[in-house]
Length: 141
Length: 198
Image 1: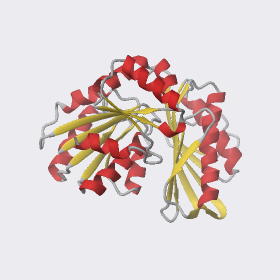
Image 2: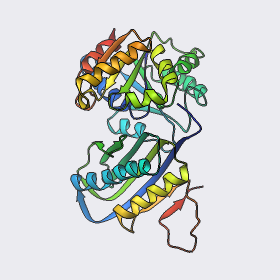
Image 3: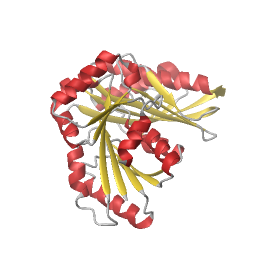
């Protein structure tokens, strides 16, 4: 249902692990990002989560699809991935009650918190209000 | 060419239902299925996931096939019919689509005939009551067009909740088939496949 408070955000996270991670490690790490983004969106005042979804791909072609829709940030994960070191995750957030810049801020904050300083985020919604500071976000616009 | 539209609110599990349904239909009948995947966002995920599972997918991104992309839907159907001629096209609209407008858009289609159209509405058992409180009218529109309703994630809620959901949708005037299912575990997906075959 398209309403004025509907927001759709998309970004692409890239992270390189110090060493190859197992499926379980990757699912836990990237699932953690999806989960925490969902929880933070509710904390910041989202009325309803349409979905928070991620698709992780590793350098050898494996993938995991991860999604969350509930306030507790519980995730569902499926896919065929044995492990990997260079990971990319497209993340989609469709949500009611938060604007896109707030969602983008939450994604950046969660990625910084859970993935450490080495991640890169491609996003077309980033506001470069901190041009003098180091920033992991690549603006696509 | 038959068409199956798998509609439902965001996060209801439409993609998972579709993957299970394709699995059922492929195994039992060996039919050739093409998928049209409509993502509201500019970077789609569901189409990529289905491709990873080996499906033949056409993406329509960055809008909704019930309004801004309705002409693209008709064109994609025409191209699929002309070039691939699948036995069945499965269409997954965005979770914000109004299926009534999709059915209207398809009336503009001119190509190999669509011999049968089925519209399935997927509901999220865990969140149905909250979604109904916010979007009762659009939900009624969904139900009005449905050939069958799938209460997905049925394994995640108590029996009483399922009964309440069923009572609510009957109260909203829906008198068709209701299937309690779990795309995650595969429960009752065979029953859904029977509806599609009928």
